[in-house]
Image (cartoon, rainbow, N blue to C red; front, top):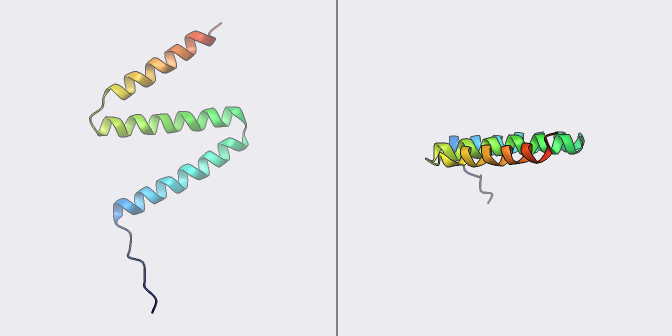
Length: 77
């Protein structure tokens, strides 16, 4: 007797699609070397900040901005 898997809910399908696309983009970016890896991390950082904002954590954007500001200050010529 084979059991059919239950259909995914809309939220599960969206999450699976997001993971699929994020993993593909990460692989593509990694193939570009360090610049691509940095771009992939930037994309992920923005996604996390957006998720945090939706969950009521406005400070996530502030923290990301501070991190980036510190990075720029460290390497600015």
